[in-house]
Amino acid sequence: MERLTRRRFLGSTLLASAALVGAGCAPLTAPTAANTGAKTPKSMTWMAGYKPQANVSFVGVYVAHDLGYFKDQSLDVTIMHSTGQGEHAKLLAGKQVQVITETATDIVNNVTGQGLPFVSLAVLTQTGDEAMVTLQSSGIDEPKKFEGRIVGYKVSPAFEYLALLKSAGVDRSKITEISVGFDPRILTEKKIDVLPVFKSNEPDVIRHLGFEINVIDPAKYGVQVMGQTWAAHKDVLAADPDLFERFTRAALNGLAYAFANPKEAIDIVMRYAPTEDRSHQEYMLATETETALTEQTKSKGLGWQTLDQWTQLQAGLNDFGLIKQKVDPAVFFDDEIQNKIYRGGKLIWP
Image (cartoon, rainbow, N blue to C red; front, side, top):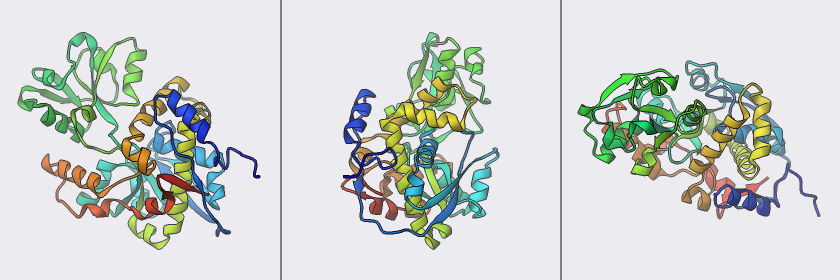
């Protein structure tokens, strides 16, 4: 009998279940072994859209790389991180990298607005990454109380915020909206009343500054939005679907391992982000684990995406005038890979 190793992760159902139950999550199903022959070695480059940290769209790749899951797929993956200004999207558009991290809303914007043929391989955070935060001392604990207040936005008012106002019946004309940067102290210094945040980032930062906060999550008000994805160029995907199938299979196996073994996953993250605060990285992974594990992904598999999800997202963006035109939502994602790598909700491995 083959000895169980971290590289294989085939018999870890009990370990995964125990870890996830302890974290308040439903257990993941263990990967299913597949009959495999020798694979032709291939190489590719994955680029994250930000600096190294514990976003789930990063962690799955880090773990797959360091535990040898990519090697199990005869895949040599070079890991890169964007230096800013949308470098990762520009390189993907130029076919200089093969996979990037990208938000679902950005994929829709890139396809409908710029004609960039970006395709989602997997949706890693299923309920969106953004929320609104207020100080508890302000008494603003629901969207309706935004009226008469100063609400910040980054770059432009986000879809999640606009959809939240509509869902909660808020009169936007009674709100003063101003552009803010990325320093959360603008809220703690009471220069604004409501701050847009990434759920896995600023809430932890603000609490560490000594302030109690309210996190107002659009998902809890029925806002349907997806978050982080792995994206590819449609033409490159079509030319070598096997490459992307191998990548997605290994990276999702890495993500499953990370959810079952969060301490070890953070150990790996810190190799890529040695100057980051470990406790903040732990918070980030724990928070995003909750948004990655939904009824859909528990039954179908991590990263699962549907036509209905993309249809609803495009329709929402269109309703608020955030995209120039609507297209066939089927162009936003590839479902052939997920249908090949999962069987009955279990990842086929290796």
